[in-house]
Image (tube, rainbow, N blue to C red):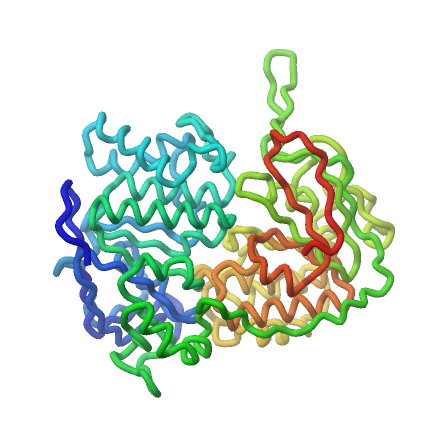
Length: 525
């Protein structure tokens, strides 16, 4: 535990006694029977399989869980410094799994300053903190985008928004820092930058840290302690201790003495990659389904200035790539390189700035060759897109209805739904509200809803986000089967192990300022 630090930060203490929480509309609690104490200044890595209640605990500690008017249910007690987390304004800073939900203002500098302003920090000190926080998370470096304070937040990539959210927390100087999958959508260099930024903040302030991250190796040397939660109320078997806690101890001890138990629980222990189904790697005709030629992409729209139309600034340009039946295309590159924007354009959801996306004969029949001009029912039955933020594609209030939505509207049979529910480990959640699921469960549901429509091309943005090792292996194996059955899979990902399972080709996007034509590389994934 850190020694006394100078400055105004007072590290927080956490106490849970028999604590549990059931989300509204859910039959079973997300977490229950939790007994846990975290001392001021401790640094804790919180682990456990997808759905073990890790995010629920973090939201509760931040005081943002639930509403007195809904039918959620809390048991036991959860206290920060001996007081309920609700109403402790500014005591905790929470970075959520989806940084999109934490962007408040339209400019980078204003967004970072927002939390500190609400805590009535003096103006001069606010902007000193803003500059320091942006430097700490690497957003003002060339590699991080070299962003000015006036840079629009709407133009940030998902990974840049994660860094922005962290900067806003650091500028608040909370006594409790809560991080929910803070590096999940970052490129490898960005992962280390964010981890090191957190370390520098903790060294300066002595704040208490609770971080949720599936991959242990990134954080194990920064934390004092690993706590492993398990689904269900009472831990049983070897190593079982406090109710709701499977394991608790120093990182090296937990990882050494309980490696097999952690692997069984789906924890990504260092050096472990779960076994997956082997690809047949015989993709039939390898029919051309989609082609991008000299493509430039942007999320901005053209704007008028007087009598002139100002074209959008490309997030990436000069892209040439092909998508073939039964083959995988992996899109890689640093945060901010336009990977997600390219994927959305390839999938017919954004108009090209320049160049073209063309559908092959087998995919375009009856709809024309330009996917952007297809009607909705023509698009979703041909190209299924899984967004980086799963919530953006949920349209109902129940998991089963979400899965049935596509097949019903397309007039397809619903026979595949049962298989998807089972294979993607959603059977216990069919009656739940999609918005109450964990991040990993939301991601699996978003994949399942798209697959239910039987598309020939599947476009996935960060498909393994939030997955424990077991659900990761099931998802990777399932996609491998789809490839062998002739579906084309396009993945935007930083997950090298996932790319290796799917095989195929790699399209690496670099900074657009390089001005180089970007082509896919055969056999690189």
